Length: 546
Image (cartoon, rainbow, N blue to C red; front, top):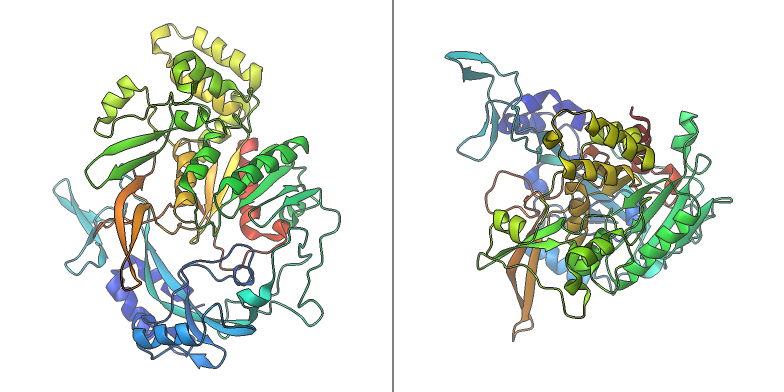
């Protein structure tokens, strides 16, 4: 309710918005930035945990545990209390938490006349000087579109009741799926969330007769049909089956689980897919890249770039993982699974030999790499693109129409064969939506951007990701501490930073195409998940051209 009070104030400088925030603070359910500055910050959420079900997300702060309050304490006092009283290895039981959730202003830097003042505050001018006249600031910048940045104005308190700790929550079992989502209401002051009842405190009731469900705590999957999703039932439209895969981390085990999930869902008839990376903290970057390579057809696509401390700049090519012996093939397409590997075999057969792969130099320009290595620069496809290609570039009929269309062009040289081939390849791919949130971090962010920036996804749905694209080495110190040294950084295929660099005004993290908040909680019942429902709408819109 408090957040709605600031909707109209966002058109003024953020400094004024803070003043409005302070003047509207009329109860004890809102904290100022100063009051919340020393509260413990949630830095990670375990996927499928009670905390995730309750809607706790990365970036929230903990105001109290039971009757113990952190407000008013110094940072050293908070740290001492966490180490002695609430350490994960010693704290046992169920806790009543008070969570301080950020109240955020989303600031659009694309507005004409937008700038920062001398104190670093964002200012949006009412008038701009154009063509010799001062005109009202009502225009949008037409080029160099920048994702909105987010600025925290304060914190709203929300109560979470009876949440089990790590020692009492028990292991995750995929067959345990809630029939109904948890009862919660976090929008009103003093709201509470009951995670359990006396009858179901220690067990969940499985959903009746799911179409297909399987996996484990690392990778689990499900086939969503209209009877499995309340969102598809509401629309009343006959929807095709959608494969849902949740990846909670990246490792050799997750890669094997992902391949198994794809095989099972393909056999069950999935026509499109949702990959859920929410609260995926990352893992082994090579496994993330290997997984991404199965969804990109062109061996010359760039998965990411690495920028090292010596100024070296090198692309991570899709081809590097296609020649890997563990590469399972090109997946989720009507084309043969060996099509990418066959292309490498034609162009560079030596790369398929043991030790045959050679990485590009770290000191070549992009133009040089395009000439010498044939790398393909990224260009993300929009949702409108998927709508227009959904019907026109599918299968052999789409290929014949494309050839017929190109034959009707008087000047054959005007036909961009690479773009036409790219469009045909995308038309044969099954549509894909990726879910991200504040807990999507590190190699999970690199994975998401590799697919999104190369136009493989219909959309990213969720909230801005964590923003960690650094490669760091840790050195142990004699006193038991450690030195963490940043040696390089990942850039997305569109050459965007994942991590905020210095005092740059651009925000960190991967921005979603469509915003969907996880603060309402992520239910075990996938069919009752709000963001999954949004993803289903996006897939249906792309398929129908709506």
